[in-house]
Amino acid sequence: MLEIHNLHAVVDGKEILKGINLTIRNGEIHALMGTNGAGKSTLSNVIVGNPRYEVTEGTIIFNGQNLLAMSPDERAHAGIFMSFQMPVEIPGVSMANFMRAAVNAQMKSRGEEPLKSSDFLRQMKAKRELVNIDQKLINRSVNEGFSGGEKKRNEIFQMAMLQPSFCILDETDSGLDVDALRIVAEGFNKLRTASTSAMIITHYQRLLDYIQPNIVHVLIDGKIVKTAGPELAAQIESEGFDWLKD
Amino acid sequence: MAEIINIHSGEHKLMLLRNHDTDMEIFIEDNASLKFFDLANSIKSIKSEICIAIHFEGENSELLMRGRMQGKDTDSILRNILIDHKTPSCKSDIYYKYVLNDDAQGSFTGKVLVRQDSQKTESLLLNRNLCLTKTAHMHSEPLLEIYADDVKCSHGSSIGMLDENALFYMQQRGISLTDARRLLIDAFINEIQMPRLCIK
Image (cartoon, rainbow over all chains, first blue to last red):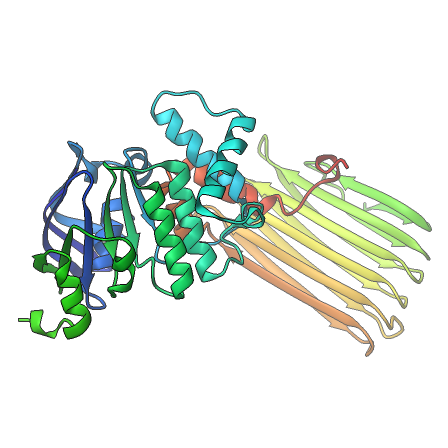
């Protein structure tokens, strides 16, 4: 369970988050919508501990742990995963080596022995088939030369390998055509368990047609101004955000 | 005193091991192929500062030159390289990479000289560098001096630090900062493979 209380954060000296309160229980899917620059990506980056973002006030508790005191890799080990809005290309680092370092670090954090190469490769293959990602992509450097859709699918593949309990999908729908969006969303739905919770950041209803949220929040100017059920997303789709700006 | 080496026709391999401290002058004759590997790798403190001049004296010869330079602490790694194309139809391909940590200093000056008679020369001169700290210093100066008009030559240089976005991306997947840095550094330097590392 994720509990955010009175969260304030600054980026490059500018206050972006101005007192966020949010609780996401196990198994819940929350959608976070809002105008450009409202602070949606800032919130997700703060949760995962991106050092570019500075928290000036407030707390984030994840399954009883003080998240803000943990390094980004410790947060990942605790079960937090973010599908990046713009996944980073890492030339020279193969997907296999990258994934192996990530999986082994996670196992080490649990006090388990690292996987044998053969077991690791078998796991890669199984997950690759599950999310329908091409072997060719796995043989390349991380995200290097991947199309927009391939990058997003690769994020879901990594999610499959790491099996997080809380996922942030940061504008996973941006830059995807309808078919790619469906494949990515179906991948997410396949991986989800009854206790997986998620925060889905999006501008549009489209993604929420595939991944149905329990709760929808609207973020404007660093604050959550409205929280309601899935019908709120449909209302925003037809009426925009203007009626919420007061 | 510089060490003088003559390269006759046929295939040759030369490798400079760590802490080599003698200047070199190499003469390449007709129909020769030279693969030259230059390795500076700090185990103890090193000062490796050398000049290497390579002269093409014959036609239809090739030079492949690779440098893998890694310095830390107060290491100083300097390469002053002259590739002298005196004769036609030769190829040179020079690629040096440096990784500098702590207060290490690196310098790469590479000059490809293509003289008037050396038509059909092909040359590529590249130097890429990674500074791991703000106190590491790199000086890079790739130069082309061309007097022939039917040649294909290019040069390039870059100096950068580790990509913060890539480091964070890896950390978000659970990889520690130390391991993430190691992966990025290896990815950078392993583009330059020494022969003993690529047994095929």
